[in-house]
Image (tube, rainbow, N blue to C red; front, side):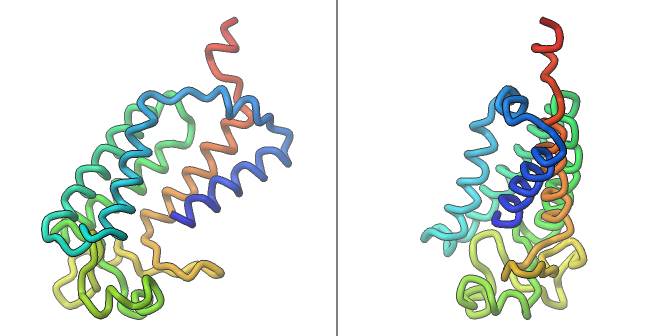
Length: 181
């Protein structure tokens, strides 16, 4: 999630530096924005609450991620660049589904995250350690980006690029409703 906040900030800084207007971003209209907020909150609750120990809770996250994919597809024509977010979320959904509802995390990176709790437990919420039975491990959380001390997947990186692009383009784009007036 920290990566995505940095991506949004990066898109904002780049867009403003290139002459974009924050008012264009403020006028960007989303359909059902609470759906994305709810999905992100579900992700955090499943990871950082006692639900992280409940078998089956990871499927709640799978459903919320599927809803984000549907939401971004619904907004592809409305929000330029959101197709990258769709692609990244879809990659994450594929690897998570292939691994029983859990995102595989490289062992060396899992030691640094969450105080190493994932290494101790083997699974936590929607995360599991990569191992010999991991499917599509190359789509899992095996990337580290300095200075962030977290594990990321190729899907996470694609989502980050998409978020930065959405913000950058939105700062330079006059919403259709304003252009028609």
